[in-house]
Image (tube, rainbow, N blue to C red):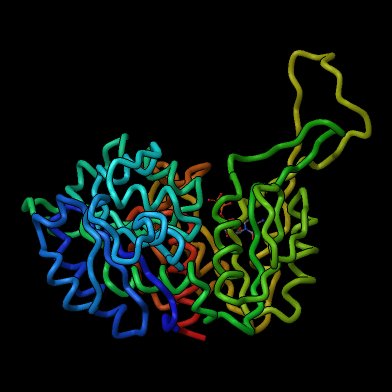
Amino acid sequence: MLREKTVVLGITGSIAAYKAAELASYLTQAGAKVETVMTEAAQRFISPLTLQSLNHRSVACDMWTPPENFDITHVSLAQIADVVLIAPATANIIAKLAHGLADDLLSSVVLATQAPVIVAPAMNSIMYLNQATQENLALLKKRGYTIVEPEVGRLACNEQGQGRLAALDTIVSAIDRVTGCVEDMAGLKVVVTAGGTREAFDPVRFIGNRSSGKMGYALAESAMQRGAEVTLITTTELKALSGVQVRYVENAEQMLEEVKKATEDAAVLVMAAAVADYRPKKVAQSKIKKTKDTLLLELERTPDILSEIKGKLLRIGFAAETDDLVHNAKRKLSGKKLDLIVANDVSAQGSGFGADSNKVILITRDGKEIELPLMSKYEVSNKIWDWVINIK
Ligand code: CTP
């Protein structure tokens, strides 16, 4: 599928630079045209000759070598790229990109390109988790860059932590996705819910929760990009998703009705929404006035959407917990007879409500636990869809 695609591979000065050689070789063998750009620091870890020999093309190392055909190197590379991939990406290049610097060839190429950009960080875990690096990455994500999160494991500095360059497969699947090469969910109809429900008790007030809807939107977007037919039932409007059927609802009852309709012929339901378990028993017709010192609201149970939707479809739930994560998630998995539950510690740093990232454990019906490192909600979504594709 990568045939005919031009991948501009940026290599920066991380010890993981040697892994870029394997990546370049894989991409070349898969039929991609790989144009390599190396920073000065990268050349201290690996020789341009290695990349040149693997890709059978020259490697661009600086702005000032006269170009062979009088194209301006950084502009021509930026223009021919179908995707720019920086692997490994150091904290330094991430900071430069976040601030729009263009003081070397690679940062200039990125600034001059309109192609999608993928950044695969690799560094010491403390540098990676440093607020500066995390905020720079968040900024890049907001601008639409794809971040391929580093893995947890033993690092070159002999420490254990998150910072190892992501596996070759993970990086290649990110390239496939952003270049639209993979439609592995084509023909699959999926329904995703997003956001927190709002249960009114008078015309202007409601009981709600902190769910932002970001996880549901990431699920819908990633499924759509992988070719699925997607219905998103949401309480929030986060961004326009062309190609996704969006239904807006407010409360649990309305969400249930829309989910029922949408799942009639669907293969998968993912309930990422935070559905209220209780709602006010009575809804006042007019705004309640503050006439007394206290106000008692009587609540009643809402319908449990996941439990009400029966049939052959795969049903995936989320368990947002602050304590006893796995135990509570497993209770919900069996109680609601789910195929998969995404256990989510909402009190963990960088995880949960409103965050762009999430740290989750996927727990399957047969009790298998797949613990994922802290990654973007988009990456978590793709892990969930990978699991779906695997068992479909
Ligand atoms: N859910 C649902 N219908 C509801 C409530 C929740 O379908 N009325 C779904 C959520 O979308 C989520 C999963 O069920 O996928 C969460 O299970 P639940 O036990 O309802 O979680 P909590 O509301 O967090 O429950 P508890 O307060 O018991 O922790």
